[in-house]
Image (cartoon, rainbow, N blue to C red; front, side, top):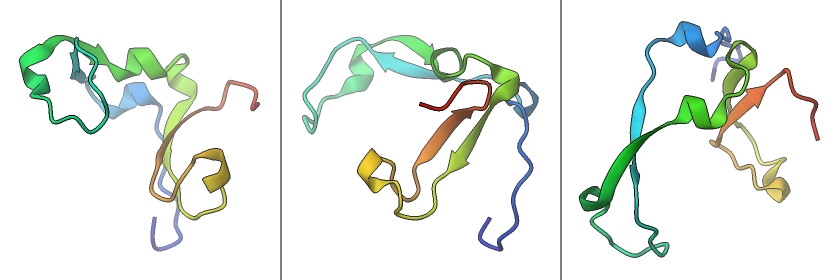
Length: 87
């Protein structure tokens, strides 16, 4: 997107297979160097956790600093569901 052109937005189901990420069963303090792979219990499907309406949902990468006060930083990846009312 650096050339000023927008990339086409595809519904999530058209983007390919679903992937599972490992979910560690233990909670750890931030910054503590834990061998988390030793505690993986289940996989977590981010599609199931983050996506309510797959045909209305897409991802956007943030460019710029205007939303820093809202905790959204340059380079962040946003999950956008256009079927929901903004709040």
